[in-house]
Length: 237
Image 1: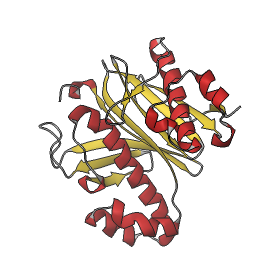
Image 2: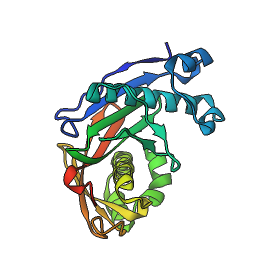
Image 3: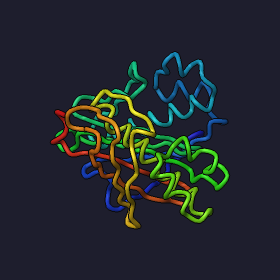
Image 4: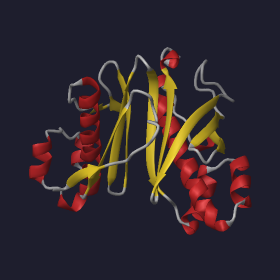
């Protein structure tokens, strides 16, 4: 098999009432027969892509299908929208992520959750963190980053990168506004997996410059899972 069950247990559940599903996959074992058996139609852009990207796409959709089945009783597959974001069934919000050989998806009902974004990353080593930190961190974040012992910098940059990815996945469906790494700041994070971010860009009348948004994270081995979600009171923002 090219996919196998993977258990990522987070306690408490990142988003109340949500369903989180994860899989291990091996792109080198994916065959045309496997693709056909999955019953997942590949967009033209994915058909033209390399086998690893095809495997990432399919594994993510398999996670989403199972999460939707558990949540709603209907094993549907989110299509890919013109902006390349997943298109979720009516009444549901969700997010998909993959890293290396792990794919995962989370879904939640819109009557309790306005949006959710998740991201999974492998912890960066010290060399890679040094190479990338100026692309990911704003000035205040860089100051905090450079004050850390060298061996702790990979962890902080991985966490910051991942939380900003989750923030984007959560807020873009609500606002329709693109934003980038320099448009958000990780203000603080705690040992119990809580984090707070601040926007540095006006997205809409609800999510303005300076808005504070809570997030969370969980570490398993060398991987970091992050999430950002907002309650349904923000759904009309």
